[in-house]
Image (tube, rainbow, N blue to C red; front, side):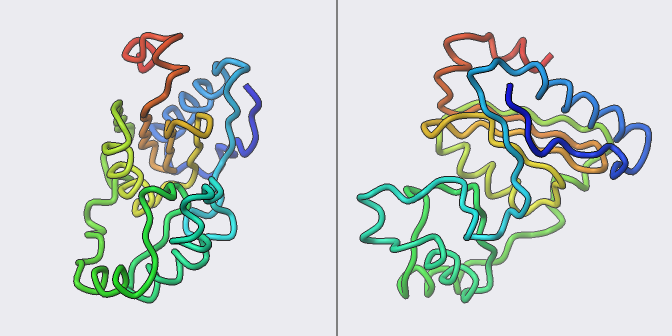
Length: 183
């Protein structure tokens, strides 16, 4: 696999976290050549959105900056993992978000016990929920593991909490027994 953005293990907090982070990096190194792995440095910066807007979404959303502005004005945080078909912008969305409670930060996955590993596999409905949780958690390193049509992700915290998820990922479904990959 093409590896960019591999973290320095000097940022991990303890031995447990060091082992978990090493495991995640070893997993990244075993990915097949067909998958490009890249890190996401700033989860909340719309100028570095993971995906561009598709042509049919541009007329409604205009730009990721527009989506981010709507979300931030309403007191929430934009997440650059989101896809255009999960996104909204404008006054109606702003008014709806103003009525929506902010994310409960006590649900931050990185607060889990050191060495916690979370696996999910499903469709884009599950990915949309999991990406929201990943974006609101304090992961130091997040990698998208798949091409345009899938939403597979690996997130690692300095406390050694790892989230690995596969969503609508034809490559993984056709070439791997996903549950064995997790082992």
